[in-house]
Length: 406
Ligand code: ZN
Image (cartoon, rainbow, N blue to C red):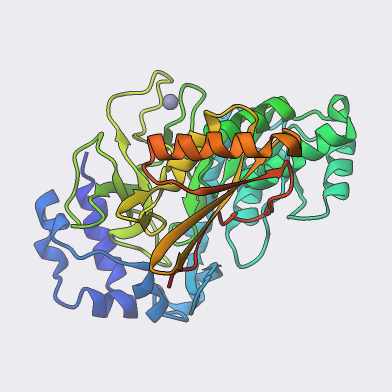
């Protein structure tokens, strides 16, 4: 269903910001009266938002802004997102829904490891936990000794983390043999694409059910959607946001079921409304109704980013395909790193992967991985085995592909 009234209101509000006043200079909100009209509006890119630094996105008077967040600018100027009191409240409502969809209640003790601060992560997990009435344990990242001690002493029942940090914690619990002292029953994992093998390892080693939470700082933060117990697709809170899937190369809107890039329009946001914002996350809208009965549309687990696709010797390489491939090979872990270099006029791809085999068997497993790569992806890497735990785990997002060609 196309939420025309909410979208018209959003365009009127957005044009009060210096950014949209200029970006939509030739758009008259009165002319947007149908889905077709809406689809003619130009996209908003993260690069555009950078130009609005510091507060050019704000669509309300300064006294209505109660907080700002900033998206992690890996390069260049950060993006500042202002929030009104209502925006903060709406975010908490969405986050509480996520926890409820994951089966958490006020009896749970929610161990929050994502960072607090300019980044939206930790504080979103906190807001939702408090609104739910659960006990929030605001750890933030790092200091694994203390994390584990608190997890034992406070009897934490739910772990909130990125997938790589959840993996690190799972490995530490295993290594220290303290599994019987851990009370976790659920894991709420956010902000990273992860493969099935990693998911199984975390779930098995922690003994928990895992849920993927979705979100991005530009659109509230984590908590705008989560998967239910029935399948891996995520329900999106469509009373707050409107989703489209586009062909990343042409911008054309794709029918439900087809994979492409997710584009989001906010429907209720006051501080920084965004219209047709390109997330660069690749997914698809899952058609039909979910067995769980929730009446919110679903998007599939994120398969990668349109700006992460790497082209090597004419073949497009998606990180998600590497995940899938490695998870099908015995004795190989979910962790890997890819280096792409250009030497003597040729692209060279080096793949580091972890294995639980001994060094004497490295050569054999390297040849197996190289052959599987050639057969399924069409590119032959130089495969290099390392032992489990040797590749970096990060508390934030783990970078797996390093393109050194440019
Ligand atoms: Zn469902």
